Amino acid sequence: MTSAQPAFRAIALSKAYGKRLAVDHLDLQVDRGELFGFLGPNGAGKTTTIRMALGLVAPTNGSVEILGMEVRHNRSKVLPRVGALVESPALYGYLSGRNNLRVFADLLGGVSAKRIDEVLEIVSLKGREQDRVKTYSMGMKQRLGLAIALLSNPDLLILDEPANGLDPAGIVEMRDLLRELAGEGKTVFISSHVLSEVQQICTRVAIINHGKLVRLAPVAELLDAPGEFEIQVDSPDTLVSALKLQEWGREARVEDGLVITRAPEGRGRNLISFLVQNGHDPDSVSERQRDLEDIFLSLTGGDS
Ligand SMILES: Nc1ncnc2c1ncn2[C@@H]1O[C@H](COP(=O)(O)OP(=O)(O)OP(=O)(O)O)[C@@H](O)[C@H]1O
Ligand SMILES: [Mg+2]
Image (cartoon, rainbow, N blue to C red; front, side, top):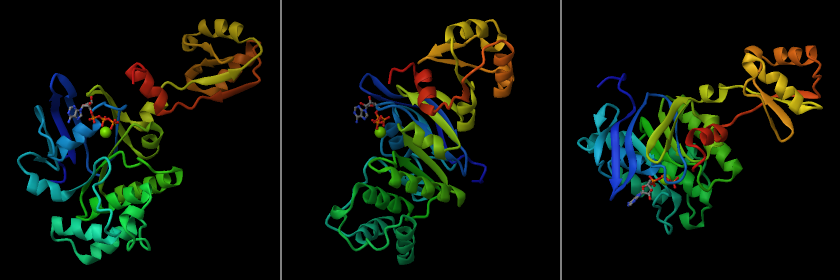
């Protein structure tokens, strides 16, 4: 096995529950060191895919390879190298955070006492590690789940909705933590239906809907296209008519009283020149921020 092996690979992966295809011929590859987002609305098939990746559920068809190894037949070799957090972690509420880690460390085997301190430190639970888990907040439980996932110092982290139940500050913390882990060379695969979340930390994303891959692209690429501007102007309809005569302005339209259009060569200053030269002096021109939410809706036809 070489480091050229992808961290994660789904090959024509499918899972049927009765007649329903939860995952439908999914092909996906995640390279080492990527911070990869796996996006989709509720019921899209994210958790089912992750369960198959962890060997918890058998695929109906196709397979998953992790670090170059087919999962179903190499569970004992694969699993120690993967840290996973699937939906809410199964924690022992009456035990302390530290003792929960001890239990999972014993199950894994070969985890040093020092590593338990390290993971407590990484997820910032130091100081609360003696408290019973049932007294933890949702965010603390989520962080303890991540600490468990980190016990074996895995090469690949598979996290199903890691931001679940976290408040905005907790989300920022989790984001920083995942970035740090990726910075250390770990591959981080996170699923989410919270698009803005993934947009901020992932380098590449796969978007799935109804079990099928809808789009696979670098986040930057999704956010770049198609680059539109918002113009505030006295007579929006007149301007739209003028813009539509231009090659670059064919998709011009009015939304909420603002004119939305692309710009000549994609440049705002060219757009402003055009407006001024043609007697449509604008009150303001600003570049439109598209977030993944918009892109997602346009890709999935808004049927999420
Ligand atoms: N054990 C099961 N038995 C029957 N159907 C299932 C089972 N697990 C999942 N499904 C179905 O498979 C589809 C995909 O579910 P899955 O949990 O993978 O979606 P998800 O993308 O993780 O959604 P969410 O964002 O809500 O977590 C859904 O239609 C779901 O009802
Ligand atoms: Mg899920």
